[in-house]
Image (cartoon, rainbow, N blue to C red; front, side, top):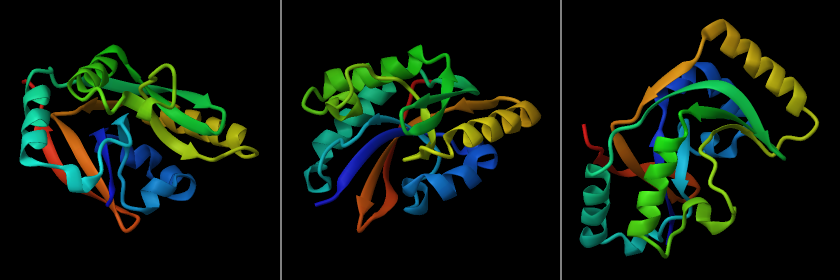
Length: 172
């Protein structure tokens, strides 16, 4: 049994944040690239049936491919993240997935409000202010990261390593 994740992969962000994630985000060290989580945990891997995968494909095919930029640093209590702008299309994807799979709420149901974000550093406390300053400086030098996600990604965490299990194209 392995956990799965539905996410938007954002490889365009790796040049800007890869070194932060390698050091401060355990999921990066387990093979998970820069991403925006939509539903985690989604479903146990042994329950991924052809019918469920077909439903994911149908849902994704009805949703326009989101375009966004990452230009703003924000935080949760122990997380530093980049905010996608506009966030509404990403929230709409999460809402559509939640409607299609009501037993698997966005954010795992752990948070009352879904906030689209790309985590850069997790489990940080004392170094948080320095990380924010460095990330803001990198953004100022680099400029915003522009993302266009052509597909919804299904990922599986097998033996503490993440790998892709499916790509479901959005409407173009």
